Length: 247
Image (cartoon, rainbow, N blue to C red; front, top):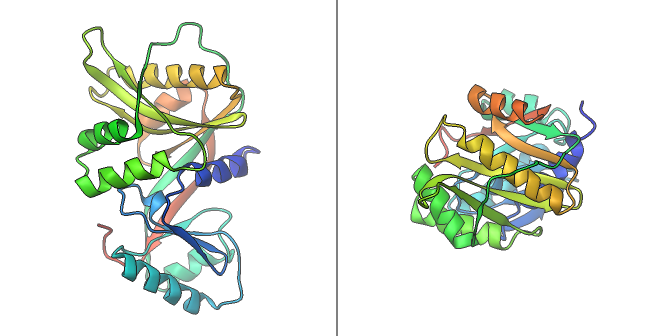
């Protein structure tokens, strides 16, 4: 496995932390009503004293109380180590696989595109409009990024007339930066790549020397874009849930 994999996983957990989270016997449960599954899922970080069935029952009660469907995010580090197989044996389907890609040596971009800095509420509203998010999801997104344990930085890439071309956010955590929520208003015209290059240049100026991001495993277009930037595959994760679909 890529040496940066675990570093990217831990940085990603910090970057995506919502205010609504708790620990249940070594499992980190997140209860944000936002759209991002990483902010409303279980991360099975450690083995505790409870049996798997008892632990799942306690987690189910917490998600029921929050009015959210239960989903477990399964990574190479999930505990117990056979968690994926045991959930599959219960009939829990796997879905929404994502690849974490990493960039080991971040170099400065010679002439990055200028970016417009956005407040957390403005950025959440902009991304939400592009994705068709509900007002509840937009508000939860703004709350999460404004209160994350590492500083949020969101930006828009505009044309000369001020028209939105793409937007995205980055989280600089020491010498590593994570890119999140990269969205193009005009897809497949190179704006996403220009945005990412500008974000990486800005992160380099702030001290970042390595980078990571998450992309849908079936999103070949985006993966090719990130490969052009120097990102390589580090690991894959997916979700499992007893629910037929997540709302």
